[in-house]
Image (cartoon, rainbow, N blue to C red; front, top):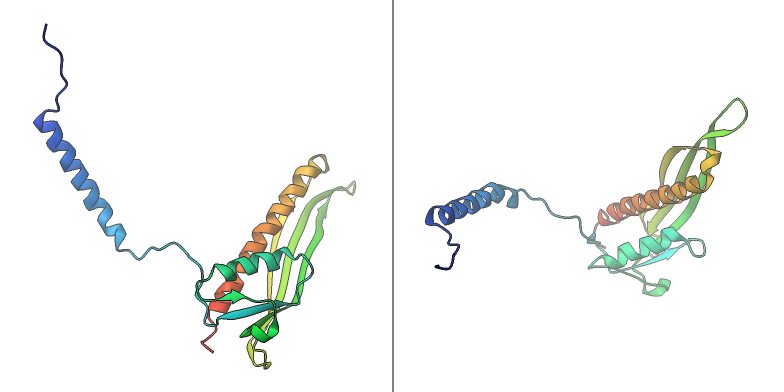
Length: 178
C-alpha cells in the first residue's frame, strides 16, 4: 500500500498567495496615515530642577521619570546646573462628600487633584507663569465596600496624576528654545 502524502495543490498555493497579497494591499494605506505612538516629549532645554515638591511626592517622582525619559533633557538636583527651574507652588489632593442618604450615609464622593506650578530660568525669567491644573472625579460610595472604594480612590488619584504629568510635559514641550 503506498504511503499517503499530503501535497499542497497548485490552486491552493496560488489562492494563499493571492490572499496574502490582498491583505498586504489592504494594510498598506494604514502605513502612510501618520499614526505614531506617543513617545517621550522633546524639550527645548537640557537640564531642569524640580523644586517646591513635598517629601516623597508621587507627582514629583512621576514627573521626574517623564522628563528623564525625554531624549533631550535631564533632571538635576542642584540649581547651578539647571537651565530651568520647575517650581511646584501647590500640590493638593481633595476629597469631599457630595451626596448622603437621609440617614447620613455617604453615597457619592468628589476627588480632586490640584497642581499649580511655574517654570523659570535661574535668573528669574518667567517661561511659564503660575499655572493651575485641576482634575476631578466623582465616585459612588458604599460603606459595605469601604476597602474596595479606598482602592478605587487610590487608582483614580494615580490616573489623575498621570494625566497632570502629561499636561505638564505638553506645556514644557511648547517652551521655545532658550
